[in-house]
Image (cartoon, rainbow, N blue to C red):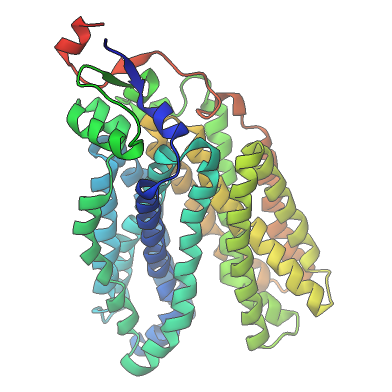
Amino acid sequence: MTKEIDVQKVADTAKFSGFHRMILFWCVMILVLDGYDLAVVGAALPSIMKQMGVDATRAGFMASSALFGMMFGAIYLGTLADKIGRKLSICVCVGLFSVFTAAAGLTTDPISFSVTRFLAGLGIGGVLPVVTAQMGEFAPSKIRARLVTIVFAGYSIGGILVALTGKGLIEVYGWQAVFFVAGLPVLFIPFILWTMPESMAFLARKQRDDSLRAVVRKLAPSLQIAPEDRLVVPQEAMASNAPVAALFARGRAVSTLMIWVAFFTGLFMVYSLSSWLTKLMAMSGYSLGSALNFVLVFNIGAVCGAVGGGWLGDRFNIKHVLVAFYATGAVSLSLMGYTKVTELLFVLVFVVGASTLGTQLLAYAYAGEFYPGSIRSTGVGFASGIGRLGAIAAPVLIGALVAMKLPLEQNFLAIGFAGLVGTLAVMLIDHRQSASVQPPQEASLSSLDVHASTNR
């Protein structure tokens, strides 16, 4: 007797297994490498400025060229993943950020350096929405937010690796060494192609029934699948002829715009602090060493916030958790300028890290849950790409405030205001439209199996 098997329900209810561990390993590893590639310029910039003879303004443009690449990469490569498959898209992104980051180490002038960093940025930004969608599709629903935020914790680990290894490599081998090391991940591409599963919705749309069956067997080894059984996916996951337009369909228009605003403000806070936290703490009277300790505490808080936020998101309504995180970021940032006791300031910086960078990582998890599988990479990609405008604007706007020599409190209030806007944006998202709470749509065939169809 023929039966239908909804593969997304299988994924939602599957037990966490070695198959999930393998996907989690690759997604975390890719973002560790991705985070390293993004942070590597910060460690090498003083040496690059000295060797190439550029001033701070030009050096800032050189450093920001990767951010422009990330914006376009997140939008276009994230969308491409829903058309060519996530596995291939991930490998394209890894190839881009590995090859062109290594190529940046061969440059001798600001223009060629900026060009190679822009091209590397395409891969750095493009891989973020794809791994979000990949982990989100295969993760059991009970621990989905936790797994996605663990993946994004790898991003912070990559930045920490730069801090731990960058100084030694540069002192011994020159600034080029940290860029050459970043080219090694290209060697992982064959292994990713070999072991990473393809999106089930993509396999269904391409009518690759044998491949889909193989993935489902790995996902749920105890599930009995007879040759005559049909593997199906929700109708909406099959309909992806116009994935960008689909972001605004089925009542998602306002929510999509609010997700974009939330990403903009979240990345504005993150990059304001990444660029200016050391300087702002120095303006408070702390030495460079103490200021860097604040940066370390900030990153530790970010990892804890991401993992803790994922755990809370799995136990409670993830939208409500995200609203609380944005609001906490707004309040804690506003208090930073008024806190004079060093011990309390360290605690506050930890909370700021958890509720800014940690919040942004949780936002990726929420966006991945909000959109259905057919447009998940596109939805997260566009949100990430639009959000990059906040990342690009942040260093410039906060730098302008610093140049105006305003009271320190006003600088932190300006960053905190972005958190307030983000709080309101998330509150306006219609969570009822989220794919995680929508009732399943009418199923579609995963293949044109005539024998199966006639047995229905």
